[in-house]
Amino acid sequence: MGIFRDDITVESLNQWGPNTLAEVLGIQFTAVGEDYLEATMPVDKRTHQPMGLLHGGASVALAETMGSVAAISCIDVSRQYCVGLDINANHIRGVRSGFVKGVTRPLHIGGKTHVWEIRITNEAGDLVCISRITMAVLDKKD
Picture 1 (cartoon, rainbow, N blue to C red):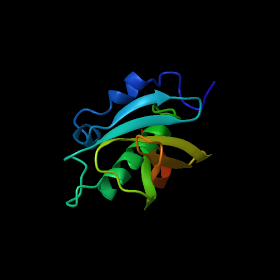
Picture 2 (picture 1 turned 60 degrees about the vertical axis):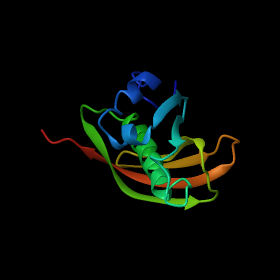
Picture 3 (picture 1 turned 90 degrees about the vertical axis):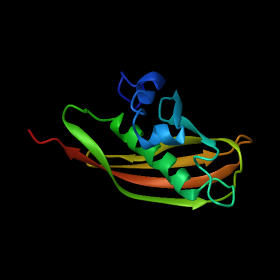
């Protein structure tokens, strides 16, 4: 048994994408593990900066999407919801084309906060960006 709710599948995660930034950027979830989620994002005209490299903001959008989805996948959504408090990213290596893959794992899953690490790599497996997001877990009001 993993950290995610039983109803969390690749298919269910990708159903959250339409009409969001994830759809615009081409983000697709590709794996749900015991303690991680995996997603890909294309490196193309949607995610480039003017010099033809992967835009750092696109990497952060991938990281925020992954950390947010991971956090909400661990909670009882009938009682709680999650919002981002803080995100940071270190951009390590440039990418011009292809796909990047993100893998997110928890550093802390508490009752009121989560901290998730997101490692983004290129198709060769080289580290492109490392990010950390802190999520607030809030109670729904009746």
